[in-house]
Amino acid sequence: MAGLSGRFSAFALLAIVLPAAIVAVLGYVSLQQWRRSSELLFREQARALAAMAAEKVSLVLRRYEDEFLSRLESGLGGGPLEPRAVDALLESTPLIQRLAIFDRRGRRLYPVTWNADDAAILGGAPPDVQAALWEGGGRREFEVGDHVVVVTVLRPRQGAPVLVAWSRNIDVLRRDVLDGTLGALEAPTIAAVFDHRARRVYSRLSVDDAELVTAIPFQDALPGWSVALYQPSGIGPRYAIRRQLMLFTAAFGVLIAMIVVGAVATWQLTRRETEMAQLKSDFVANVSHDLKTPLSVIRMFGETLEMGRVTTDEQRREYYRVITRESERLSRLIDNVLDFSRIEGGRRTYQMARAPIEPLVHQTIDAFAYPLREQGFKLEVHVDPDLPDVSMDSAAVEQALANLVDNAIKYSADRRSVRVEARRLEGGVTITVADEGIGIPRDEQARIFEKFYRVGRSETQGRRGSGVGLALVRHVAQAHGGRISVDSEPGAGSRFTLWLPG
Ligand SMILES: Nc1ncnc2c1ncn2[C@@H]1O[C@H](COP(=O)(O)OP(=O)(O)OP(=O)(O)O)[C@@H](O)[C@H]1O
Ligand SMILES: [Mg+2]
Image (tube, rainbow, N blue to C red; front, side):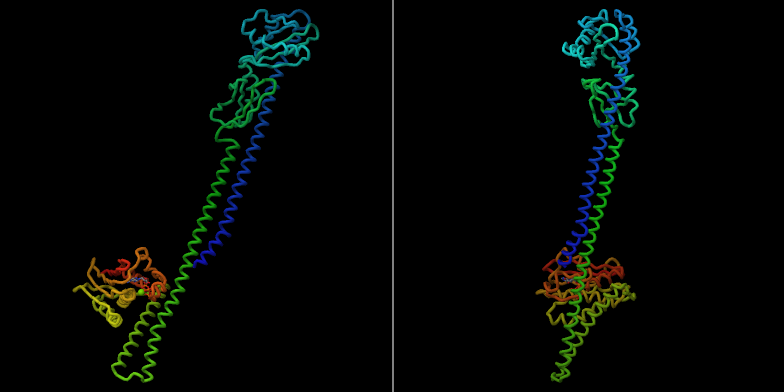
């Protein structure tokens, strides 16, 4: 048996558990890889989108300011600066919040008067920056407090070049530039713009419970500023991936669980089958042995008689009795096995008839009179007077009782005592067979009624038997609507009670 279940374990490991484990590991690894690569792809796409958005914002801003500058430049054409013309120009360009114009020597040409704020913000271009602009041209952005100041040198076709510095109106920037470019970004992505102090300047929708995907800095148009892309939680490709991952994992889990359950069930089935096969082979060996013993006794006594070796009548009668007793034992055994096979095939039928219990009890005991006397058993029989008749198959109940008595004799050791009682109970009758024999371990008491089941193996128990006796008794009890129970103490004895309804 151990060999077979050992083989099964090895087989299960090779054929079921190993492939399942490999599938699980492969599945997990490829899912993780898929998650990582799609996350990467998603992030790259988001970066490209953010870069494009930043580019667009810079472009629009540039164009806006270039237009302003070219208008300013043409206004400068030649003669002295007209502050009122610049005022009008500023009026029509709300993006430019503050403006200052200086000449080559650093004298302020515009505005005519300026407050401390203007001076602090626009007058703060470092001298080296100014020098570089005068020399090489171009445009510089730098931060002054909350503001971004842009400085450039304008060289009108006629007239002297001037240095122009301006700062932007954040509200107008937000409305005219950021919203126009970023607001059109494809949903569900949310774009937000942060200034050089990491304050959120713009976002189309609230990003409070959205997840940051990527953030990239603007190039030089807005130094220190950045555009960030958010994914609203619960939607978008990232969540779709997560959902799919969860779905796959769950499906995998169910698959693996099913494989494990299947393997365990198969293993249990195999184990039970193996056990049953073992019990059956024990059964065949035991029955053969049980058949052989009475047969050889009968044959030996028959031969002795035939040879005329037995001289006295008394001895001859004794030999005949032995032969009769052994044949009775033989037919009991054969009946047991035949009835058992009928039960197994579902062909066992019972002929019910109302009959008294008392004669049945005595008849059964009488059949065991010889072995009881010979082995020195103390026998007590008690039958309640005026027991009700019971509806039963007398032969079947007799066979059941014979099995109980047979067990009581067979499983007794030094204290040889059998007590049979028949009493009225719950409108029916109980027949009790008690011995003071070897008893039955508590955890085996439920199993002894199973077919082929024997406590220990026949060798260890030292007593032969086929293991079907009690299975038969239980079948008879159930067929009569009654029950069989056992009460036993190892080493002290057993007490079997068969109850039949009236
Ligand atoms: N009175 C008893 N005392 C102790 N053990 C018992 C007793 N009756 C039954 N058993 C245990 O229960 C097992 C099953 O009994 P059962 O009568 O079904 O089989 P068996 O006696 O081994 O074989 P057979 O089919 O020949 O009766 C026995 O093998 C024995 O271990
Ligand atoms: Mg028995």
